[in-house]
Amino acid sequence: MRRLTPAGLDEPLDVPTPTVDLMTTTPAPDAPEPSDSTGPGLTVCSLCAGETLGASDAHPGGQLARLEELASTGVTRLTRVECLDECERGDVVVVRPAAHRRAAGAAPVWLERLAGDELTGELADFLRAGGPGACPVPRALRALEIPRDGATTA
Image (cartoon, rainbow, N blue to C red):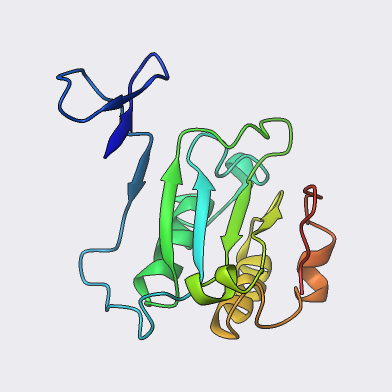
């Protein structure tokens, strides 16, 4: 087993070096386990979450709180990362296919400016329907897709 060090080097675990945990999975304290532990997941940039609506967002905790609430329902697993390298876009969310769909060729769906109750509701419906590889991206979310090389969204 190997890990990423602060210098970006991939070193064996038996070498005592400090590590940086860039990803943390944060289930809500009382979150039920997803019924299918290999269901679709979300990755969110913790640095840009909330940029789209900014101070005008009346939801307590903003967009990141909406996504955490969605994860607390058990429909998805939420992974926060420090940066998805799409900083100019704001509120970037990656919808990851379930493991078995990924193995069958489904690609993650990258979305920008995903903010607010309506779009988060569309995202929730997409996840409940199985996410990438199980159904098409909902019309309301298609305009937010970030094109990725070789990615398909069906």
